[in-house]
Image (cartoon, rainbow, N blue to C red; front, side, top):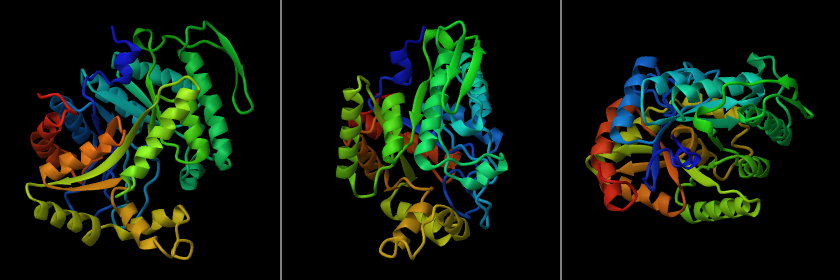
Length: 371
């Protein structure tokens, strides 16, 4: 029987957990026009999950996306809904953890809790929940939903997650009276598999978002600033210390956008090819505008921010030969990351070489077990 400790470790003794991020979306996370960019379709997702499991990856993490960003490629215009995606992948695998990424304001907590339990029962304790509060007003308009002020989004998410966890609890029936969520005579059966509960993750970066994750989540998903590992390490130490102050343990996960080739030169040339020369700059600029990032507001680093957006919607670029890539990932782990969610231009094309060359190097560095 899986224990909660097993769940939190993603059923792995590896010191550094590795997963694949964004495969449920067309183009994945690479804002590029290259023809080999990721399809995001179901057959490819299914092949990828089975491949990732066979190669020893610990998790699959989807992007919660309802509306594409346009541009020449309609970036992330085709996406698979994440909970049904997770349930299907869990039914087709045996060991890998699969997350659902869920917009709390858009799904009723009782319905959501039932969906999560269903996926968790299918996967026998391998479903994980990534809670998001939303920032994209275009998506909320699709649902006829009003986006709350920033801090109020986390106030709502607190009540929503409290209600979900009550549904998962051993309570036979309960009422819930919050400012935003009001429920009466709720019954929710079955419960999560084996008496535990899904791993809960959140990517809050603001003070309110970080406080929400520290209070409620098992993992805080944070970006690693390029060239600023000391800053990231301080962030990890601070988040863990704050969690311990309220009697909790918190892991920190991050994301890396990987371009790995046999030689440094080949990797750098391909990175320039997909991320600069063939970036979907129209989609990048639309995303920037939606986030309020303009040249007038950020005159000193606007181009750096624009490049950061083109590079897989954020996340540190890891570009080089296998030795360099392994060393970069090891440095992120040394800075305190428990896990790294990886994205590639085309996962099925690139993951086998990464696994063959980089995973053994990480094992020799003491971060992964030899396979």
